[in-house]
Image 1: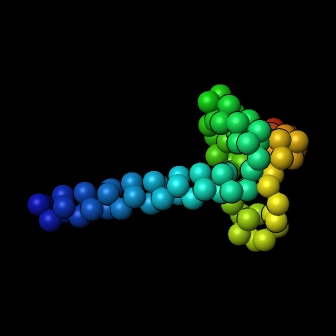
Image 2 (image 1 turned 90 degrees about the vertical axis):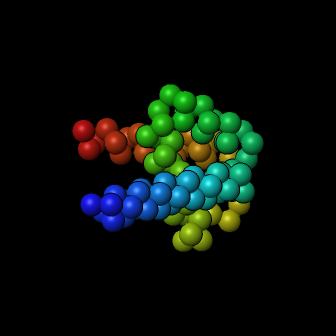
Image 3 (image 1 turned 180 degrees about the vertical axis):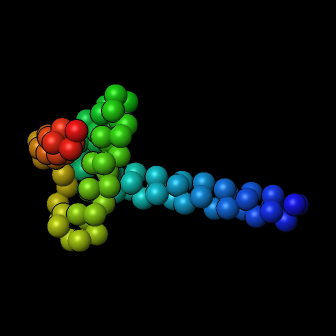
Length: 93
C-alpha cells in the first residue's frame, strides 16, 4: 500500500514537472517569435479565453518546430491566427 502511494506521488510529481516544462517552452516561444504587441494581445486573450490562447500557443509551437516561422509574429498575423482557430472551433460545434 505504501509503495503504491509513493508510486502515485512520483507520477503526479512527474506530470506536474512536464506541465511546468511545457509552460516554459510556450513562454520562450512567445518571447522569441512574437512582437511585443502580439504578446500583449495573447496575454489579454489568455485572461478571457485561456483555452483559445493555449490552442494558439500550441499552433505556434508546431509551426516553429516545422520551420514554418522564420520571423516574429506580428499583432496582425496573430489576429488572423485567432480568427482561423475561432472559426475552426465554431465548425466543430
